[in-house]
Length: 491
Ligand code: MSP
Image 1 (cartoon, helix red, strand yellow):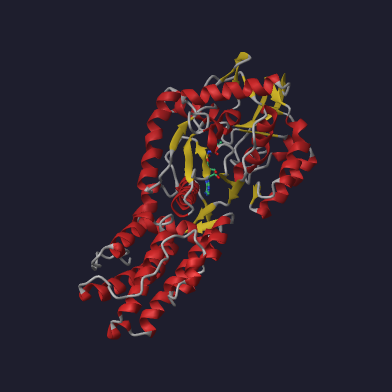
Image 2 (cartoon, protein in one colour):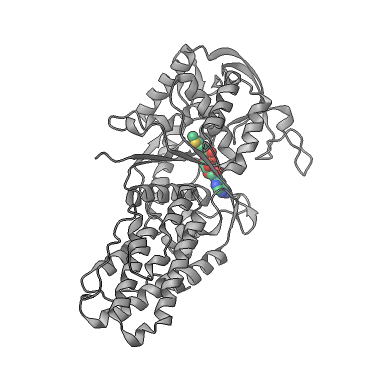
């Protein structure tokens, strides 16, 4: 039987600096979703991440460093790949917008939209923030505390005014099709509480979008007018589609979910589907916009030294604890605050005291028996998908694990609650040892039930904390269970 497919993406990051916690967050979540779909739901998964390498921002940063843009990004891309390796990210492809196949897809897409009659030549007069790579209207601009007027609402820097010939995409034609898409496909704008804002803005009316520039070079030329360079976002968004144009990968389109930060929702929820509809291509099934992390309650900012890079993140309590913390601390969708103290607390109180303790205690009780747990009632609870097995099982302990509920929570991307459920079950296991005084009784049936429960826990935690869960699985599926090294050393 052919497996169901599942396609998840992260934004492609600007390689103008090394990756930090904000980039790591989406990438870790994507990895958890990919592993869950692959290992637990048994789907064929495609997981895409990469870098967004064109545009004025990169061109300018490279120039400041005295480098050619390509040379500059070539030096930064390995830093992203290295970060993802350290965080145990198991992506299927790392796409770069300078990849040949991508440039071809962008050109084809531009041509399709042009042929449809949705692109016309005009003149852009207005504001552009290179830091955001985004257009602003007069009323979007803000004054800074120091009183400088006409600044970018995000960067608070003086914004440039442009007047140049430009091709426009008839975004204004797509108000109705977009509203229909949101209505028809309820999950498209996720989470729901963020959907209102988008819907209202679309209802307010859409302006045509300038999609080309002539005042810089670093980008993809428009196929129908080589003097013009594609707007970096038109180029960037297409990456998700590019990756599925390779042989054998077509089946992954449309994407099941694009994970994005809330700051880039508009591009993904409005511009991207409009381009696709214009080109006659199926739209993705979901765009999930997550919140932002602050660091010790302050905005993450390099200039104020408020950044956490990847080495710092994993240096605190290890890779699995960092992954666990980011998914457990805040509901996916909401903003969150990162602090070293909070991470250490969760590492100590949850991973070490609950999970680590259960694993080492039970292994310590089984190991001296020196034999496989023979004579115990065999249980058939191997497979997650077969929902009734757990209920049918006579195992008293494992019955406390509500697999259906966990599956449902995961489907809604409520990762914090998924982990809460699993850790609630870990508590039940620890209580089981305590209440039944298993260290005195050494009851084999009880120990067998604990062993099976721990294997189940490892299976469920595998997407979240892959290397620790793998160790637990190995330890408890051995014929002779031994006590192993401590999984989470307290800090
Ligand atoms: N290149 C574009 C995306 C193109 S996708 C077709 C871009 N790149 S970025 O490097 O600036 O940002 C990438 C992601 O990092 C965004 O989703 C953004 O929300 C996220 N984050 C940046 N800082 C963040 C936090 N402090 N917290 C959480 N996520 C944050 O935008």
